[in-house]
Image 1 (cartoon, helix red, strand yellow):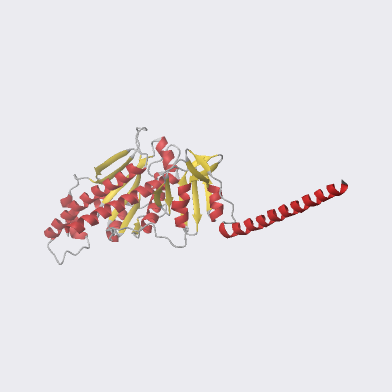
Image 2 (cartoon, rainbow, N blue to C red):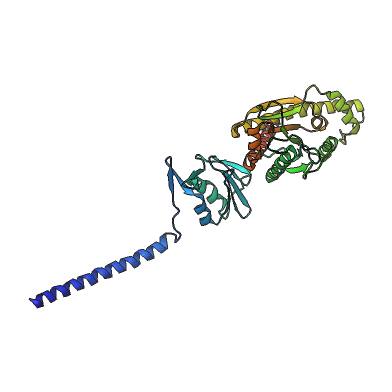
Length: 371
């Protein structure tokens, strides 16, 4: 009896030893296979938000070595790695990648105490941007006719311009927009001349002289509006009014402008040619304004007040297509708050640049068809 019990125990021990050996072998085999086929890095957690897979942005940045900054007040995030910079905003589908906009199908969300991005954000933007080789986002199938642009930041120095209820000064706002615009246009390969790049006062006549001596293709003057009617708000663009005396402008240009009309010496003939140039410039200014307004309407949730003629000195004096852009009303409290937001300012700049590109490509195509 005791012998039988001992034999059974011995058999069970041998079976247990065999099972243990199989388990250990399987463990090592799976471990080896796993090392060869899957990354050692832990998988990113995922969230299901309204049927879409989202990733926690902090974990995503840590896994890809991307620096990030979050502004809780404006709910904006800035990502940076190397020379690249990405701006995104909670609740928005638009993402700025190195100053150029890309749109996601689903917005950035704030979920369970953290910022979460759609899975497509990683695939469409991060994986593409941080590969060793990638195509520049600025490539264009149509060569731009615009090579040089003058940017005029309104007011400055002792002239603060309009001042909002919370203290935002027009001169500071326009300079910030002008610098952002300069940076983004340069990314497109466009040379930029600034009438002022610091907080200093520049006479209107000096602004005109800078523009006319630059040989630029366009003149963009940046301003912010104000009105006693606090409810007024919106985005509008001005071009030189048809009521401006072009004949007088043409005669003055014929006398002063350094432009050689193939050896033409007749003052009257030069004045006639300048009159034709001013007429063409006005038409192109209107067309440029339309493109910028359309891009702004399609992108920003703002009131588009349209395109208007005006007799502003800088518009009358410049000898190239020229527009004055009123980006919003500082006298409107809600709009002033929006204009304080750096992300909103960047979106305004993006709209202006998109409008310039659209206008330039249309003009280039039209001229190519005529040829």
